Length: 123
Image (cartoon, rainbow, N blue to C red; front, side, top):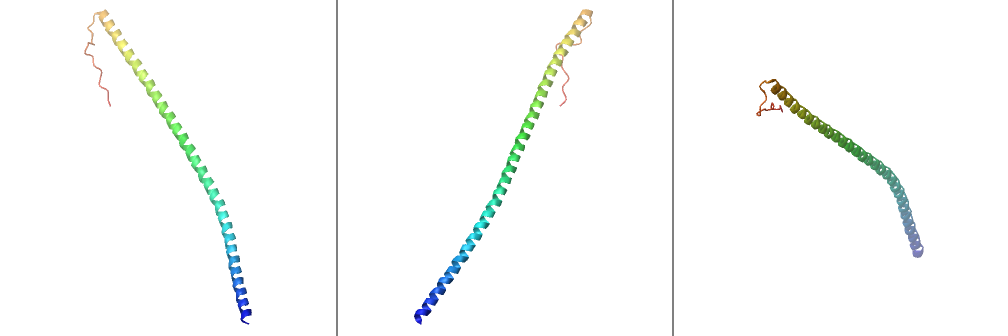
């Protein structure tokens, strides 16, 4: 009977090991399915994040280009204003010379001498 009991115990031990292996296999399959699901969800999240990052990059570039265009417009305006000021100064000098010439032609004393100073500009 010892032989039969040993075989029964060995069979029971084998059966227990088989059950444990089956449980491990089910756990592994379940974890693989869960991992695959998580990977799919993470892939979608990563794609959304990449899309948001790309949109942010495009928005930044667009904003930078608009800002550069505004800077250029202001610089152009300043240059135009500078040219206008130069033209006005030249016209002023010409008018002063014309006035002096007319006064000299009429024999009037010249109100403008060599020490002519412009009014100080206000800041």
